[in-house]
Length: 285
Image (cartoon, rainbow, N blue to C red; front, top):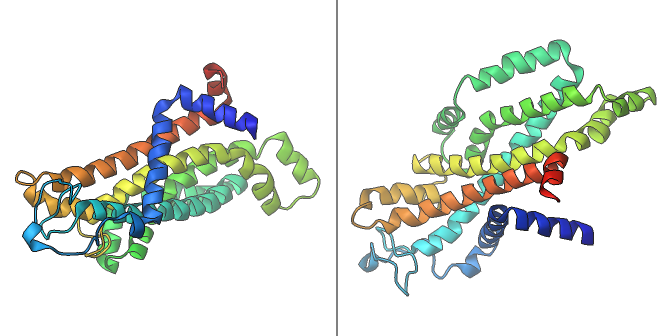
């Protein structure tokens, strides 16, 4: 345990951006969990006499066009971003592990079907367009939003897992497990997946940033969670008509989205370097 802590401290010292990103992610998670206790006001409370107020001691981030406290809505908006982002990554990663493992391990016709037909069919259309079409058909809501973003998000994980499984299935420890009579399921779950999980973790960290950005995009287009639920993308949509007379309506939610996306990208880059033995040796970790 102490060796791992020392190694993490060295990694944090070597990559301060990743350390800052980890701190911001922890803060976002804490904000999402303890939002009812951290928010100074009710995020849905309308106070028309105070509409479009600039940042002040009473409203740290100002108020929107309905007089709602922007700082409180930012805190509650972190719940939507973290929930949707983590759910999309979990669903996409689960589907990617299943289909990628099947295609990579068995190969042949099954691999050609998933890799050439299914994956290429999904990659032929931009994921955000598929999500927009799905939500427009099904209607807004967290469940539909997660499902819509996962429909196109699993392909990247499946391609990555397939390539890793194709390489790992020919290694000696897999041949040894097969010679000992291990079932295909046991070989994949107990022997192959633990040895290919490192690049998948990196992809999941970077995918979290993409999922948060996609959620903000969908909410900006009015296809996210329905109002009056606070969402960073919906706040950007509400503030775009007041960009010049009340720019704080756009600046604060835009900064929240930017910091969240940058944090997960920094973490993904740091994990890639930390989990790569060659990079660790070069950095002296």
